[in-house]
Image (cartoon, rainbow, N blue to C red):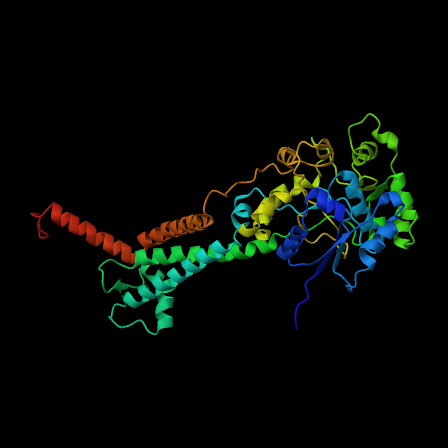
Length: 455
């Protein structure tokens, strides 16, 4: 039985697609990387002809024959300006979709994007790392088999079956370090303790590889403090829905009962909030109502603005800028690198079941950087790099260093610690003391050859 991929419904206005050079295959690229099946539809409409929100919704989705899509996102316009983006967000909230709510960084589980191990393990899913891991494991098996073939016990008998010899070569050699056995190599005259260190080095490499390979799957960005899972629990939570007069009127004009319920519980923002103030409606509302958690739905879209130096940058950028650096390597391949610059702004969307499960990056950077409209409506790459990061830890850039070398360095450090421990145990063992005493006696004999033991 084939496993059905979740479907992402995306409606893209044809004029917007031409103006932004946002190709259809970019959306399909995202869908491939996140494992979705995408239905991208180009639509034609004109607001001047009096097309309502409900009519636009029908134009986008009612003609689609797909049954029970897992995710439905109506992007009538793709991030051209903040005004155009309102339409897409408002469509998502008007009809049979769950509600797009402002999620601030305090709602996110800390991911420690700047820590050493988070930076180290974030890129482990690449093919090169898996190839390096496989080569180390193969080398480990070969050296272990070689060590097992060369070792014999004190009675010069074979150590046993191949499995037993492999086991002894890996772990049984520990007995040498603590003086319980006297395994020697048949081809060389030094004891097998160096072989033990080599095996421990390889074991630590493999263990670190294995742990690092699975760690990224546990770094999914999830919500922990969002106090609602559906519309009913949203109304009972401390979150407040804000909306402009136009947004509330648009909700009331629909035939959808949920849309009307939303409008009944929305707090209308007044235009006077913004007169003479360089702040968003959300900032103005928060300045009057303290730190109460707020979700804003207005003519200018669901506001995701915060107290940043650049008002046009979503506040969520501060929380996930570090996460983005690690996650993009799992989404994009070298073949897709030309598209990486198309993705800069992040949108946090409550999916069909009402909670934020995965963070997917879908955004657009307009090519004409000198366009005044672009500067007003977008968080430009320059602004993005200058945005204050909530975390006090700066992300560590490992891009110029081979990732495999860091694994080997970690394994070397672990094996070095094991060596120190083994040497300490060895010096405390009776076997080591007897060997040390014999060495001292030989040194005395060579230093004082004329001294007789009878005197």
